[in-house]
Length: 211
Image 1 (tube, helix red, strand yellow):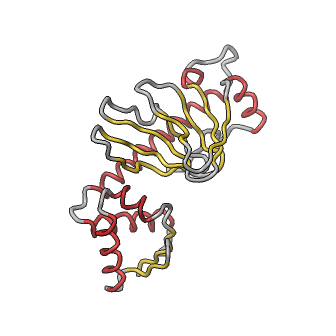
Image 2: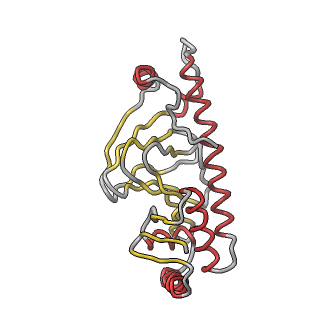
Image 3: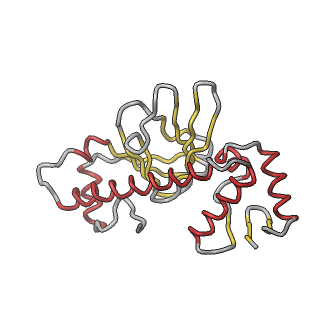
């Protein structure tokens, strides 16, 4: 599936008109700042213009989980992941991050001009939703592996296939990776060391090469 952005096939001048039509607003967040807390209704869509953020989930017992890493052109918001009464989702900046916010109702309601680029944006949004669904299914596959070792290998093999390269740069810290894989940080570190000793991979910082 081709990777789309919210503004794929929409000319820059049309994008500027859409910003006005959709009453888009931008904000800059520093490392550690909360970008958005999800509500139980579809309110807004966020688009990462630059920087990096992480989508977290907190369950009713207070356990925090990494759901997704958000980089440039990534979108987030209730239309992509509507929370339940027992889960709290929020996005937090991991570095200086600029975000454009668009109200969901402005996306689904056609403007009086019925402009073509509005339809294109909705089409892009559907394709991005489908892609995110596929990514979540891939994560479910990784998390369904029976051991920490198998989870690590499934995740690394997925990254390698995605990058078309045996050399991988982890997109998150090892602490965040342990949260993402839902495993103990110390157990994950031991398994990575075992895999390195067995010659399965070579590791230097966040650079990993599958052998």
